[in-house]
Amino acid sequence: MSHYPIIPLGIEPSYAHLLVSNVPPKDEELGALQGLLKEPKAEMDELEVQMLELQKLMKELEARKKELRDRVKPIQALVSPIRRLPDDILQEIFLLCPPEGHFPTLDPLQAPLLLTHICRRWRYAANDTRRLWTAIHIPLPVLRIPSSQRGPSHPVYAAEDEKHKLKARFASVVNSFVGTVEGWVGRIGGCGLSFSVFQADYQNPDEDACLQAIFGILLRCSKQWEHVDVAAPLRSVARLVAIRPEDVPSMKSLTVWSTSRHCLPRPTTPTQSSTGFPFVLGGQPSTPPEFALPRWRESKIFEAPQLESLHLLCLDEPLSLMPIDWSKLTSLVVEKQGTLAHLGFLPSDIVIDVPVLANVLRRCTRLERARVALTPGAPVPLSNHETLSHPNPPPQPHFPGLLRG
Image: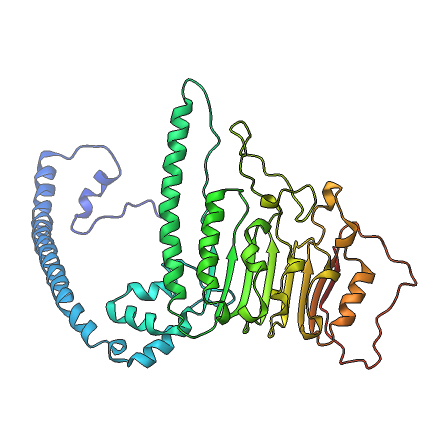
């Protein structure tokens, strides 16, 4: 490695010793070195001026570019290809926008609602595209009221005032929500309607009232129902249980999921608590009529003439007594039957064991797909239990999941 210093360009070798030491230059050396600085410093100052001029020019060019962009943007919109598309082509594109794999939601940032927020023409085109609105998922809004905290820092009147404000805000949300659903369903015209409704059970009368308002809208077009999926507390589905076969002539599939079997009693005396939600089995002699739960076993909806696919979850009713035309079904799912087994309450008539399953499957002569979970805690069948047989066996159905719960 060389020990000689690297001499900057323009410095004579006679000044090299000053670069590797702290020795100050002599007076004659100092004058010569200062003379070497004049030319590069003058050039640097000139370059700085040129750079400032270029920066000023760049700002002027950026401002001009933005001005031109603002002028061009509306003109480009006028000549945009999608602007020249006929309405029927635009509507076909709209039909490709909703999500796949689930029903469209009420989210204004997703199709189809998003399409109504772009411009007036798109809003008219979307609203006139009836097939765009033939499916909807309706998750009910939830009213969350925090538990009251009594104390000097949080008096009772303050908690009640906060509760009143929350309920008033929830009422406003419900009005908007119900209006959106009504507008959605009102756009289908004579097309079929497929929907899913979900209500988690927080045992709140305001949420129950919202669900009844939604059912009122849907029931007005029940003759157009095709695929129906309802997950709600049993106490809230009385209007569905009461549906007659002629009310749903086009319904092809039905999913029923009881999210709870709690009733929601009203206090009969001022001293009676309104926060109790006892478990009540519909039809028990000791059950007051106003608290009795509806029975799916008494429903005629299962006799819908076009019903081919049936999913039953958490039904907890005797499967053998359900008024179902099993011979029409091509798809059957029964799961979570006997959900109270972990509480030590398991009526024998709702148990799904191998004999019950065999009896049901024997009657499903057109079945192609099935998933059935045996009731937890069901007795283990004997090794010589009855086998499925048929005098004229139909083509073998496909059972991808025959499960023991």
